[in-house]
Image 1: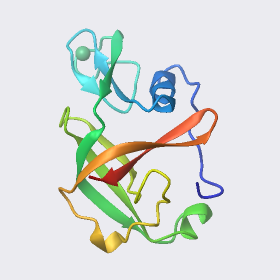
Image 2: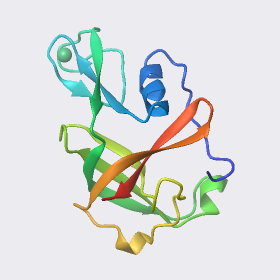
Image 3: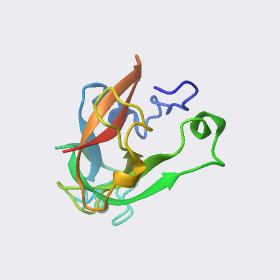
Length: 145
Ligand SMILES: [Zn+2]
């Protein structure tokens, strides 16, 4: 991991289950118990039916690049020193209504600036990998499949 990378708070009751699953290597999204709609990022209330009841679905972690940007400075100092790199928006194969922002890396141990940003393409198939960066944090990232 790049030194100085800001890390998520993983004990917030709204998304703690997401981060606990990530530590197990599982990509999860919320499913509303009222109407069945999946949603991401985690939030306490369904935006469709306003139910506060939910469960968590384990996704396959497969998707494709729906869009992307190549980050260039000015950026936060931590990221400026490794730019340029690709930030991608992944549409999940399990549920095309779910899109997740992340980084494309060459392999599970790779860094965010190790994929040539000129090779990133919309529609490319990707799979999630988890990089455990602290005992409490596993970051979901994406590799080409
Ligand atoms: Zn709902």
